[in-house]
Length: 388
Image (cartoon, rainbow, N blue to C red; front, side):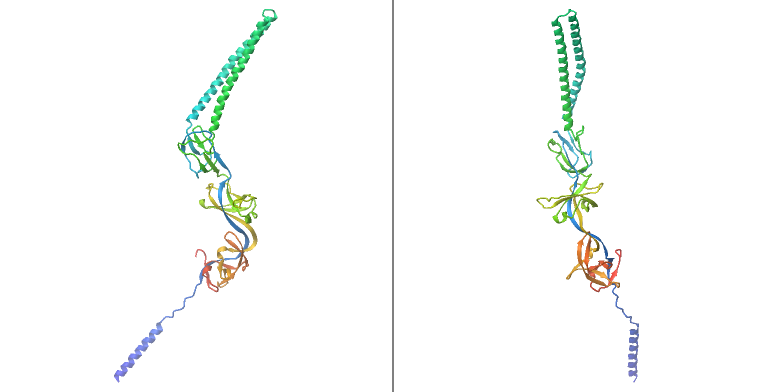
């Protein structure tokens, strides 16, 4: 009897402990889905133009060849092909010792002939004056019978000889001066683009396209020692197809990007060729670079964006917001409860990072532009900012 009571008490105690434990157990709630984090923007209407990206080359409007009209030894070269130079910069140094000696000799000859001309003019003028006076005096004596006709004739002959001698002597001295002057002029002409110190200087600012100078070699008068492409007035040369050329005109703007110097600027079309290159069947087009643009060198590669087929009041969305599915192109929009909806769209013009929507959107919709890849139809979204 006592044993039965002990068993009953133990079972009662266990039941109480069990019930006590059940009463303290916490209820775990299911977590609420916060939705996919996305960035959005309102669909807008505006202007759009087709963007055509064409690769081209930066060139100078002016190219100048530097000639040296003499054969002289090059003792120093200061530049290399591709270097940028300013007008007046030293390109190289030539040994002009021989030419300087020749010039000094010609200059001395000129000064000597000039001095001789001055001195001889005085002497010869005096001789002619004496001969003229003697002739005049002899004529006077002949008039009073104090001189014969032969004496008169001899006096006249002497006078004529003095005049002729004066003319001949001065003419020879003039020739000597002219010869010396010609020699100096020729040496000066041959030293065009070369200073008296033998330095060849750049006539314009630009980029060295080619260089035929080498230390201890001789320059050739018939070959340019350097070719410089101007950087003062630069442009980008491109070639476009027949489908684009008809849509371009002088004065149109184009976006120029030069990756080598991280440059992006707006240029203006200067030339539109009316005939294609026979080899490539492409039409040359030149786009002017804004004046004062620094850092560019001739030969750099550039990408030019040409804008054609402009359309106004078009529905425009970022190109990256458009996705491709089994049924074609679509975008993802959100309703007021931030529920995602896939909207099939049709596209038109493609511009600079944007695309025209011709069907599917009308403007004002909330468009998902970041995170749309992770949303399915009816999925919950959570709008965040780029910073978040």
